[in-house]
Image 1 (tube, rainbow, N blue to C red):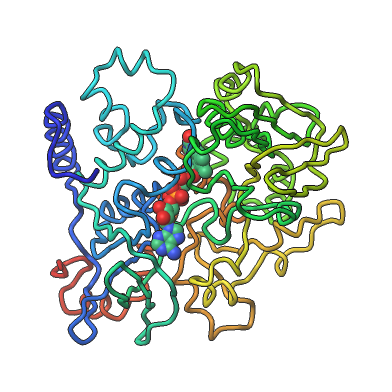
Image 2 (cartoon, rainbow, N blue to C red):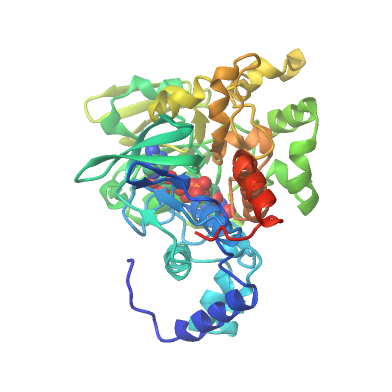
Length: 474
Ligand SMILES: Cc1cc2nc3c(=O)[nH]c(=O)nc-3n(C[C@H](O)[C@H](O)[C@H](O)COP(=O)(O)OP(=O)(O)OC[C@H]3O[C@@H](n4cnc5c(N)ncnc54)[C@H](O)[C@@H]3O)c2cc1C
Protein backbone atom coordinates (compact mmCIF):
# COMPACT_ATOMS: atom_id res chain seq x y z
CA UNK A 1 0.00 0.00 0.00
CA UNK A 2 2.88 2.41 0.73
CA UNK A 3 4.22 3.38 -2.66
CA UNK A 4 6.37 6.06 -4.23
CA UNK A 5 4.00 6.33 -7.18
CA UNK A 6 1.82 9.44 -7.18
CA UNK A 7 -1.55 9.00 -8.93
CA UNK A 8 -1.71 11.61 -11.73
CA UNK A 9 -4.47 13.72 -10.23
CA UNK A 10 -2.70 14.05 -6.89
CA UNK A 11 0.30 15.83 -8.48
CA UNK A 12 -1.57 19.10 -8.55
CA UNK A 13 -2.72 18.77 -4.94
CA UNK A 14 0.75 17.91 -3.74
CA UNK A 15 2.05 20.95 -5.59
CA UNK A 16 -0.51 23.07 -3.84
CA UNK A 17 0.34 21.50 -0.48
CA UNK A 18 4.00 22.33 -1.06
CA UNK A 19 3.01 25.94 -1.76
CA UNK A 20 0.75 26.08 1.31
CA UNK A 21 3.60 24.81 3.47
CA UNK A 22 6.01 27.28 1.87
CA UNK A 23 3.65 30.19 2.54
CA UNK A 24 3.27 29.06 6.15
CA UNK A 25 7.06 28.80 6.43
CA UNK A 26 6.79 25.07 7.17
CA UNK A 27 8.37 22.90 8.22
CA UNK A 28 9.25 25.15 11.12
CA UNK A 29 12.99 25.29 11.72
CA UNK A 30 14.23 22.76 14.29
CA UNK A 31 14.82 24.48 17.61
CA UNK A 32 15.25 21.64 20.12
CA UNK A 33 18.96 21.24 20.91
CA UNK A 34 20.05 17.76 19.81
CA UNK A 35 20.97 15.21 22.47
CA UNK A 36 23.62 12.64 21.70
CA UNK A 37 24.53 9.80 24.06
CA UNK A 38 27.56 7.83 22.88
CA UNK A 39 27.06 7.58 19.15
CA UNK A 40 23.28 7.69 19.34
CA UNK A 41 21.10 10.65 18.52
CA UNK A 42 18.19 10.72 20.92
CA UNK A 43 14.62 11.15 19.71
CA UNK A 44 12.91 14.27 20.99
CA UNK A 45 9.61 12.41 20.94
CA UNK A 46 8.82 8.73 20.35
CA UNK A 47 5.22 7.96 19.46
CA UNK A 48 3.81 4.50 20.16
CA UNK A 49 1.12 3.87 17.53
CA UNK A 50 0.70 5.38 14.07
CA UNK A 51 -3.09 5.53 13.86
CA UNK A 52 -4.80 8.86 13.29
CA UNK A 53 -3.72 10.25 16.66
CA UNK A 54 -0.11 9.17 16.24
CA UNK A 55 0.12 10.60 12.71
CA UNK A 56 -1.54 13.89 13.65
CA UNK A 57 0.80 14.19 16.65
CA UNK A 58 3.82 13.78 14.37
CA UNK A 59 2.47 16.34 11.91
CA UNK A 60 1.79 18.83 14.70
CA UNK A 61 5.27 18.33 16.17
CA UNK A 62 6.72 19.01 12.71
CA UNK A 63 4.65 22.19 12.55
CA UNK A 64 6.09 23.23 15.92
CA UNK A 65 9.71 22.68 14.91
CA UNK A 66 10.23 19.34 16.68
CA UNK A 67 11.70 17.00 14.08
CA UNK A 68 13.52 14.17 15.83
CA UNK A 69 10.31 12.21 16.05
CA UNK A 70 9.60 8.59 15.17
CA UNK A 71 6.48 6.47 15.53
CA UNK A 72 6.49 2.73 16.10
CA UNK A 73 3.53 0.60 15.07
CA UNK A 74 3.19 -3.14 15.37
CA UNK A 75 0.96 -3.26 12.28
CA UNK A 76 2.19 -3.47 8.74
CA UNK A 77 2.26 -0.21 6.77
CA UNK A 78 -1.25 0.74 5.67
CA UNK A 79 -2.88 -1.51 8.28
CA UNK A 80 -2.65 0.80 11.30
CA UNK A 81 -5.78 1.37 13.39
CA UNK A 82 -9.13 -0.32 12.84
CA UNK A 83 -9.88 0.88 9.29
CA UNK A 84 -8.55 -1.93 7.11
CA UNK A 85 -8.68 -4.72 9.67
CA UNK A 86 -11.72 -4.97 11.92
CA UNK A 87 -13.85 -1.90 11.13
CA UNK A 88 -16.57 -3.89 9.33
CA UNK A 89 -18.41 -0.77 8.20
CA UNK A 90 -18.62 0.43 4.61
CA UNK A 91 -18.28 4.08 5.50
CA UNK A 92 -17.04 6.16 8.41
CA UNK A 93 -19.48 7.04 11.17
CA UNK A 94 -18.47 10.67 11.25
CA UNK A 95 -19.38 13.53 8.88
CA UNK A 96 -17.36 13.60 5.66
CA UNK A 97 -16.65 17.36 5.95
CA UNK A 98 -14.66 17.19 9.21
CA UNK A 99 -11.14 18.59 8.77
CA UNK A 100 -9.69 15.76 10.90
CA UNK A 101 -5.93 15.55 10.61
CA UNK A 102 -5.49 18.67 8.45
CA UNK A 103 -4.35 20.87 11.36
CA UNK A 104 -5.50 24.03 9.62
CA UNK A 105 -4.06 23.26 6.17
CA UNK A 106 -6.90 22.94 3.60
CA UNK A 107 -4.82 20.93 1.11
CA UNK A 108 -4.24 18.25 3.79
CA UNK A 109 -7.94 17.48 4.31
CA UNK A 110 -9.61 14.26 3.19
CA UNK A 111 -11.86 16.44 1.05
CA UNK A 112 -8.91 17.95 -0.84
CA UNK A 113 -7.45 14.46 -1.39
CA UNK A 114 -10.78 13.10 -2.61
CA UNK A 115 -11.76 16.02 -4.83
CA UNK A 116 -8.33 16.08 -6.47
CA UNK A 117 -9.02 12.57 -7.76
CA UNK A 118 -12.78 12.34 -8.18
CA UNK A 119 -14.06 15.93 -8.34
CA UNK A 120 -16.34 18.10 -6.25
CA UNK A 121 -19.59 16.62 -7.54
CA UNK A 122 -18.49 13.15 -6.41
CA UNK A 123 -17.68 14.49 -2.93
CA UNK A 124 -21.06 16.20 -2.70
CA UNK A 125 -22.85 13.06 -3.87
CA UNK A 126 -21.07 10.87 -1.31
CA UNK A 127 -23.03 10.16 1.90
CA UNK A 128 -20.04 9.30 4.07
CA UNK A 129 -16.35 8.50 3.56
CA UNK A 130 -15.78 4.91 2.39
CA UNK A 131 -13.65 3.21 5.06
CA UNK A 132 -11.11 1.84 2.57
CA UNK A 133 -10.61 5.29 1.05
CA UNK A 134 -10.04 6.79 4.50
CA UNK A 135 -7.14 4.37 4.99
CA UNK A 136 -5.74 5.30 1.55
CA UNK A 137 -5.89 8.94 2.56
CA UNK A 138 -3.97 8.21 5.77
CA UNK A 139 -1.26 6.46 3.75
CA UNK A 140 -1.03 9.55 1.50
CA UNK A 141 -0.95 11.91 4.52
CA UNK A 142 1.97 10.03 6.01
CA UNK A 143 3.87 10.07 2.71
CA UNK A 144 3.41 13.75 1.81
CA UNK A 145 4.44 14.89 5.28
CA UNK A 146 7.41 12.48 5.27
CA UNK A 147 6.46 11.14 8.70
CA UNK A 148 9.00 8.70 10.10
CA UNK A 149 7.05 5.56 11.03
CA UNK A 150 8.66 2.21 11.76
CA UNK A 151 6.11 -0.52 11.00
CA UNK A 152 6.03 -4.12 12.22
CA UNK A 153 7.66 -2.69 15.33
CA UNK A 154 6.04 -3.63 18.62
CA UNK A 155 6.96 -1.65 21.71
CA UNK A 156 7.30 -4.26 24.46
CA UNK A 157 8.54 -2.08 27.33
CA UNK A 158 8.99 1.58 28.18
CA UNK A 159 10.74 2.96 31.22
CA UNK A 160 13.70 4.98 32.47
CA UNK A 161 16.69 4.94 30.16
CA UNK A 162 19.31 6.76 32.28
CA UNK A 163 20.71 10.27 31.75
CA UNK A 164 17.20 11.66 32.20
CA UNK A 165 15.98 9.80 29.13
CA UNK A 166 13.27 7.28 28.45
CA UNK A 167 13.95 3.89 26.88
CA UNK A 168 11.70 1.88 24.56
CA UNK A 169 12.21 -1.78 23.81
CA UNK A 170 11.15 -2.47 20.28
CA UNK A 171 10.62 -5.87 18.70
CA UNK A 172 10.74 -6.06 14.91
CA UNK A 173 10.59 -9.26 12.82
CA UNK A 174 14.39 -9.30 12.67
CA UNK A 175 15.72 -7.70 15.82
CA UNK A 176 15.08 -6.45 19.31
CA UNK A 177 16.34 -2.90 19.61
CA UNK A 178 16.36 -0.24 22.29
CA UNK A 179 15.47 3.34 21.39
CA UNK A 180 15.92 6.40 23.57
CA UNK A 181 13.70 9.45 23.68
CA UNK A 182 13.09 12.51 25.79
CA UNK A 183 9.32 12.16 25.63
CA UNK A 184 6.96 9.31 24.78
CA UNK A 185 3.43 9.70 23.47
CA UNK A 186 1.24 6.61 23.91
CA UNK A 187 -1.17 6.81 20.93
CA UNK A 188 -2.39 3.23 21.04
CA UNK A 189 -6.10 3.70 20.42
CA UNK A 190 -9.38 3.16 22.24
CA UNK A 191 -7.98 0.18 24.15
CA UNK A 192 -4.60 1.85 24.47
CA UNK A 193 -4.14 0.97 28.16
CA UNK A 194 -6.31 -2.08 28.11
CA UNK A 195 -8.02 -4.53 25.86
CA UNK A 196 -11.27 -5.39 24.14
CA UNK A 197 -13.85 -5.96 26.90
CA UNK A 198 -15.49 -9.38 27.19
CA UNK A 199 -18.25 -9.83 29.81
CA UNK A 200 -17.63 -12.64 32.34
CA UNK A 201 -20.28 -14.84 30.66
CA UNK A 202 -18.02 -15.08 27.58
CA UNK A 203 -15.57 -17.22 29.57
CA UNK A 204 -18.19 -19.99 29.79
CA UNK A 205 -17.49 -21.10 26.24
CA UNK A 206 -14.24 -21.97 24.50
CA UNK A 207 -12.62 -19.39 22.26
CA UNK A 208 -13.44 -21.28 19.03
CA UNK A 209 -17.09 -20.32 19.58
CA UNK A 210 -16.56 -16.62 20.07
CA UNK A 211 -14.85 -13.46 18.88
CA UNK A 212 -14.71 -9.85 19.95
CA UNK A 213 -15.78 -7.31 17.32
CA UNK A 214 -12.19 -6.03 17.25
CA UNK A 215 -10.74 -9.45 16.44
CA UNK A 216 -9.51 -9.81 12.90
CA UNK A 217 -11.46 -12.67 11.28
CA UNK A 218 -12.80 -13.46 7.85
CA UNK A 219 -16.62 -13.03 7.86
CA UNK A 220 -16.87 -15.64 5.08
CA UNK A 221 -16.15 -18.28 7.76
CA UNK A 222 -19.64 -17.46 9.11
CA UNK A 223 -21.40 -18.62 5.92
CA UNK A 224 -24.30 -20.94 6.76
CA UNK A 225 -23.89 -20.46 10.54
CA UNK A 226 -26.31 -19.18 13.15
CA UNK A 227 -24.56 -16.16 14.64
CA UNK A 228 -25.34 -14.25 17.84
CA UNK A 229 -24.14 -10.67 18.25
CA UNK A 230 -24.05 -9.31 21.81
CA UNK A 231 -24.40 -5.52 21.95
CA UNK A 232 -26.35 -2.82 20.19
CA UNK A 233 -23.85 -0.10 19.31
CA UNK A 234 -22.24 0.78 16.02
CA UNK A 235 -19.83 -2.18 16.03
CA UNK A 236 -22.66 -4.63 16.80
CA UNK A 237 -24.47 -3.47 13.67
CA UNK A 238 -21.32 -3.60 11.52
CA UNK A 239 -20.53 -7.14 12.63
CA UNK A 240 -24.12 -8.35 12.23
CA UNK A 241 -24.21 -6.84 8.72
CA UNK A 242 -20.86 -8.41 7.79
CA UNK A 243 -22.13 -11.84 8.93
CA UNK A 244 -25.40 -11.48 7.01
CA UNK A 245 -23.64 -10.32 3.84
CA UNK A 246 -21.24 -13.25 4.13
CA UNK A 247 -24.19 -15.66 4.06
CA UNK A 248 -24.87 -16.40 7.74
CA UNK A 249 -28.02 -18.53 8.06
CA UNK A 250 -29.38 -16.43 10.94
CA UNK A 251 -28.15 -13.45 12.94
CA UNK A 252 -29.61 -12.71 16.40
CA UNK A 253 -28.69 -9.45 18.13
CA UNK A 254 -29.01 -9.47 21.92
CA UNK A 255 -29.60 -6.01 23.34
CA UNK A 256 -29.88 -5.21 27.04
CA UNK A 257 -31.90 -2.03 26.54
CA UNK A 258 -35.57 -1.66 25.64
CA UNK A 259 -34.61 0.21 22.45
CA UNK A 260 -31.56 0.84 20.30
CA UNK A 261 -29.37 3.77 21.34
CA UNK A 262 -30.40 6.76 19.23
CA UNK A 263 -28.03 9.47 20.34
CA UNK A 264 -24.45 9.75 21.48
CA UNK A 265 -24.91 11.16 24.99
CA UNK A 266 -21.72 13.23 24.80
CA UNK A 267 -22.95 14.90 21.60
CA UNK A 268 -25.25 16.90 23.90
CA UNK A 269 -22.29 18.95 25.06
CA UNK A 270 -20.20 18.59 21.92
CA UNK A 271 -18.89 21.95 20.78
CA UNK A 272 -15.60 23.66 20.15
CA UNK A 273 -15.99 25.12 23.64
CA UNK A 274 -16.40 21.76 25.37
CA UNK A 275 -13.51 20.18 23.47
CA UNK A 276 -11.17 22.83 24.79
CA UNK A 277 -12.95 23.63 28.05
CA UNK A 278 -13.74 20.16 29.40
CA UNK A 279 -10.34 19.49 31.05
CA UNK A 280 -10.80 22.71 33.04
CA UNK A 281 -13.98 21.44 34.70
CA UNK A 282 -13.87 20.43 38.35
CA UNK A 283 -13.24 16.74 39.07
CA UNK A 284 -16.86 16.35 40.23
CA UNK A 285 -18.21 17.68 36.92
CA UNK A 286 -15.93 15.52 34.78
CA UNK A 287 -16.82 12.44 36.79
CA UNK A 288 -20.56 13.15 36.62
CA UNK A 289 -20.44 13.62 32.84
CA UNK A 290 -18.37 10.52 32.07
CA UNK A 291 -20.23 8.36 34.57
CA UNK A 292 -23.50 9.20 32.85
CA UNK A 293 -21.96 8.80 29.37
CA UNK A 294 -20.54 5.39 30.31
CA UNK A 295 -24.05 4.00 30.71
CA UNK A 296 -24.69 4.48 26.99
CA UNK A 297 -23.14 2.77 24.00
CA UNK A 298 -21.90 4.30 20.71
CA UNK A 299 -25.12 4.81 18.78
CA UNK A 300 -25.09 3.15 15.38
CA UNK A 301 -25.76 5.42 12.38
CA UNK A 302 -29.18 4.89 10.77
CA UNK A 303 -27.65 3.43 7.62
CA UNK A 304 -25.79 0.78 9.69
CA UNK A 305 -29.05 -0.31 11.36
CA UNK A 306 -30.74 -0.50 7.95
CA UNK A 307 -27.84 -2.60 6.64
CA UNK A 308 -28.96 -5.20 9.20
CA UNK A 309 -32.73 -4.72 9.32
CA UNK A 310 -32.95 -5.16 5.52
CA UNK A 311 -32.32 -8.89 6.04
CA UNK A 312 -35.27 -11.17 6.85
CA UNK A 313 -32.95 -13.53 8.76
CA UNK A 314 -31.84 -10.81 11.22
CA UNK A 315 -33.61 -10.62 14.58
CA UNK A 316 -33.30 -7.96 17.27
CA UNK A 317 -33.93 -9.20 20.84
CA UNK A 318 -34.53 -6.18 23.07
CA UNK A 319 -34.38 -6.33 26.90
CA UNK A 320 -32.34 -9.49 26.37
CA UNK A 321 -29.13 -9.45 28.39
CA UNK A 322 -27.22 -12.69 27.97
CA UNK A 323 -27.38 -14.27 31.44
CA UNK A 324 -25.64 -17.52 30.67
CA UNK A 325 -23.86 -19.35 27.89
CA UNK A 326 -23.13 -23.06 27.61
CA UNK A 327 -21.50 -25.10 24.88
CA UNK A 328 -22.32 -28.63 23.73
CA UNK A 329 -20.57 -30.33 20.82
CA UNK A 330 -20.76 -27.74 18.04
CA UNK A 331 -23.33 -25.33 19.42
CA UNK A 332 -23.69 -22.66 22.05
CA UNK A 333 -26.86 -21.97 24.00
CA UNK A 334 -27.51 -18.42 25.19
CA UNK A 335 -29.94 -17.84 28.04
CA UNK A 336 -31.79 -14.52 28.24
CA UNK A 337 -34.82 -13.48 30.38
CA UNK A 338 -36.92 -14.10 27.27
CA UNK A 339 -35.75 -17.55 26.33
CA UNK A 340 -32.88 -19.79 25.23
CA UNK A 341 -31.26 -19.60 21.81
CA UNK A 342 -28.97 -22.09 20.12
CA UNK A 343 -26.30 -20.64 17.84
CA UNK A 344 -23.01 -21.69 16.21
CA UNK A 345 -20.91 -18.60 16.91
CA UNK A 346 -21.05 -15.51 19.15
CA UNK A 347 -19.57 -12.06 18.42
CA UNK A 348 -19.20 -9.75 21.41
CA UNK A 349 -19.47 -6.11 20.39
CA UNK A 350 -18.96 -5.02 23.97
CA UNK A 351 -16.40 -2.25 23.64
CA UNK A 352 -13.01 -1.65 25.23
CA UNK A 353 -11.79 -1.17 28.76
CA UNK A 354 -8.80 -0.07 30.81
CA UNK A 355 -6.91 -3.14 32.03
CA UNK A 356 -3.31 -2.41 33.00
CA UNK A 357 -2.44 -6.12 33.30
CA UNK A 358 -3.16 -6.52 29.60
CA UNK A 359 -0.57 -3.85 28.71
CA UNK A 360 2.69 -4.97 30.36
CA UNK A 361 4.61 -2.76 27.94
CA UNK A 362 3.42 0.32 29.83
CA UNK A 363 3.40 -1.09 33.37
CA UNK A 364 6.55 0.78 34.55
CA UNK A 365 4.53 3.95 34.03
CA UNK A 366 0.97 2.91 34.78
CA UNK A 367 1.77 1.26 38.14
CA UNK A 368 3.28 4.54 39.31
CA UNK A 369 0.53 6.74 37.87
CA UNK A 370 -1.99 8.58 40.02
CA UNK A 371 -5.49 7.22 39.33
CA UNK A 372 -8.89 8.87 39.52
CA UNK A 373 -9.94 6.41 42.24
CA UNK A 374 -7.14 7.86 44.40
CA UNK A 375 -7.80 11.48 43.48
CA UNK A 376 -11.55 11.79 43.79
CA UNK A 377 -14.34 10.20 45.83
CA UNK A 378 -17.67 10.48 43.98
CA UNK A 379 -21.10 10.51 45.63
CA UNK A 380 -22.22 6.93 46.32
CA UNK A 381 -24.81 7.08 43.53
CA UNK A 382 -22.02 7.76 41.03
CA UNK A 383 -19.64 5.00 42.14
CA UNK A 384 -17.96 3.55 39.06
CA UNK A 385 -15.06 1.10 39.40
CA UNK A 386 -14.15 1.34 35.74
CA UNK A 387 -13.81 5.11 35.78
CA UNK A 388 -11.80 4.90 39.02
CA UNK A 389 -9.09 3.01 37.13
CA UNK A 390 -8.53 5.92 34.73
CA UNK A 391 -5.18 7.68 35.01
CA UNK A 392 -5.47 11.15 36.54
CA UNK A 393 -3.66 13.12 33.86
CA UNK A 394 -2.11 16.56 33.75
CA UNK A 395 -3.15 19.32 31.34
CA UNK A 396 -1.00 18.01 28.45
CA UNK A 397 -2.09 14.37 28.80
CA UNK A 398 0.99 13.61 30.93
CA UNK A 399 0.91 10.94 33.63
CA UNK A 400 1.26 12.28 37.17
CA UNK A 401 2.94 10.39 40.01
CA UNK A 402 1.07 9.75 43.23
CA UNK A 403 1.39 12.74 45.61
CA UNK A 404 4.60 12.54 47.64
CA UNK A 405 6.33 10.17 45.17
CA UNK A 406 8.75 12.63 43.64
CA UNK A 407 11.10 9.78 42.57
CA UNK A 408 8.45 8.88 40.07
CA UNK A 409 8.28 12.35 38.51
CA UNK A 410 9.90 10.95 35.33
CA UNK A 411 6.55 9.40 34.35
CA UNK A 412 5.36 12.90 33.47
CA UNK A 413 7.59 12.65 30.38
CA UNK A 414 5.12 10.06 29.12
CA UNK A 415 1.85 11.31 27.64
CA UNK A 416 -1.32 9.24 27.57
CA UNK A 417 -2.85 10.18 24.21
CA UNK A 418 -5.23 7.25 23.95
CA UNK A 419 -8.66 6.10 25.09
CA UNK A 420 -7.67 6.05 28.77
CA UNK A 421 -7.47 9.87 28.73
CA UNK A 422 -11.25 10.18 28.35
CA UNK A 423 -12.12 11.10 31.95
CA UNK A 424 -9.27 13.59 32.37
CA UNK A 425 -9.30 15.21 28.94
CA UNK A 426 -12.73 14.55 27.42
CA UNK A 427 -13.44 12.93 24.10
CA UNK A 428 -10.35 14.28 22.36
CA UNK A 429 -8.59 11.05 21.42
CA UNK A 430 -11.55 8.93 20.46
CA UNK A 431 -12.40 10.20 17.04
CA UNK A 432 -11.91 12.51 14.09
CA UNK A 433 -14.17 15.36 15.33
CA UNK A 434 -11.94 16.60 18.15
CA UNK A 435 -8.56 15.47 16.92
CA UNK A 436 -7.25 18.97 16.19
CA UNK A 437 -7.97 20.24 19.68
CA UNK A 438 -6.47 17.19 21.39
CA UNK A 439 -3.30 17.25 19.32
CA UNK A 440 -2.86 20.98 19.83
CA UNK A 441 -3.11 20.63 23.61
CA UNK A 442 -0.67 17.72 23.61
CA UNK A 443 1.93 19.29 21.36
CA UNK A 444 1.93 22.66 23.07
CA UNK A 445 2.59 20.83 26.33
CA UNK A 446 5.48 18.94 24.74
CA UNK A 447 6.96 22.15 23.35
CA UNK A 448 6.73 23.85 26.71
CA UNK A 449 8.21 21.01 28.72
CA UNK A 450 11.12 20.40 26.32
CA UNK A 451 11.91 24.10 26.33
CA UNK A 452 11.81 24.33 30.12
CA UNK A 453 13.93 21.19 30.54
CA UNK A 454 16.63 22.88 28.43
CA UNK A 455 16.48 26.12 30.39
CA UNK A 456 20.22 26.16 31.14
CA UNK A 457 21.05 25.93 27.44
CA UNK A 458 18.58 28.69 26.63
CA UNK A 459 19.83 30.97 29.41
CA UNK A 460 23.43 30.45 28.31
CA UNK A 461 22.49 31.22 24.72
CA UNK A 462 20.53 34.21 25.86
CA UNK A 463 23.47 35.68 27.73
CA UNK A 464 26.05 34.98 25.04
CA UNK A 465 23.94 35.92 21.99
CA UNK A 466 21.63 38.49 23.48
CA UNK A 467 18.36 36.75 22.62
CA UNK A 468 16.38 33.55 22.35
CA UNK A 469 16.11 31.45 19.21
CA UNK A 470 19.41 32.11 17.44
CA UNK A 471 22.00 29.71 16.19
CA UNK A 472 20.37 26.54 17.41
CA UNK A 473 19.27 25.02 14.12
CA UNK A 474 19.87 21.31 14.14
C1 LIG B 1 -14.71 -0.24 14.51
C2 LIG B 1 -14.43 1.19 14.78
C3 LIG B 1 -14.91 2.17 13.93
C4 LIG B 1 -14.66 3.52 14.17
N1 LIG B 1 -15.16 4.47 13.33
C5 LIG B 1 -14.90 5.76 13.56
C6 LIG B 1 -15.38 6.78 12.68
O1 LIG B 1 -16.05 6.50 11.70
N2 LIG B 1 -15.07 8.06 12.96
C7 LIG B 1 -14.30 8.41 14.05
O2 LIG B 1 -14.06 9.59 14.26
N3 LIG B 1 -13.85 7.48 14.90
C8 LIG B 1 -14.13 6.17 14.69
N4 LIG B 1 -13.67 5.22 15.55
C9 LIG B 1 -12.92 5.60 16.69
C10 LIG B 1 -11.48 5.35 16.22
O3 LIG B 1 -10.89 4.19 16.77
C11 LIG B 1 -10.61 6.36 16.61
O4 LIG B 1 -11.12 7.54 16.11
C12 LIG B 1 -9.21 6.18 16.05
O5 LIG B 1 -8.93 4.98 15.41
C13 LIG B 1 -8.34 6.32 17.19
O6 LIG B 1 -7.09 6.57 16.62
P1 LIG B 1 -5.79 6.23 17.39
O7 LIG B 1 -4.68 6.70 16.54
O8 LIG B 1 -5.89 6.76 18.77
O9 LIG B 1 -5.82 4.65 17.53
P2 LIG B 1 -5.76 3.51 16.45
O10 LIG B 1 -6.27 3.99 15.16
O11 LIG B 1 -6.42 2.34 17.07
O12 LIG B 1 -4.20 3.23 16.30
C14 LIG B 1 -3.43 2.73 17.37
C15 LIG B 1 -2.21 2.06 16.80
O13 LIG B 1 -1.36 1.70 17.87
C16 LIG B 1 -0.68 0.51 17.51
N5 LIG B 1 -0.19 -0.12 18.75
C17 LIG B 1 -0.88 -0.46 19.86
N6 LIG B 1 -0.05 -0.95 20.80
C18 LIG B 1 1.19 -0.94 20.28
C19 LIG B 1 2.47 -1.34 20.78
N7 LIG B 1 2.64 -1.84 22.00
N8 LIG B 1 3.55 -1.18 19.95
C20 LIG B 1 3.40 -0.67 18.71
N9 LIG B 1 2.21 -0.29 18.20
C21 LIG B 1 1.12 -0.41 18.98
C22 LIG B 1 -1.73 -0.31 16.79
O14 LIG B 1 -1.14 -1.24 15.92
C23 LIG B 1 -2.52 0.77 16.04
O15 LIG B 1 -2.15 0.90 14.70
C24 LIG B 1 -13.90 3.88 15.30
C25 LIG B 1 -13.40 2.88 16.15
C26 LIG B 1 -13.65 1.56 15.89
C27 LIG B 1 -13.10 0.54 16.83
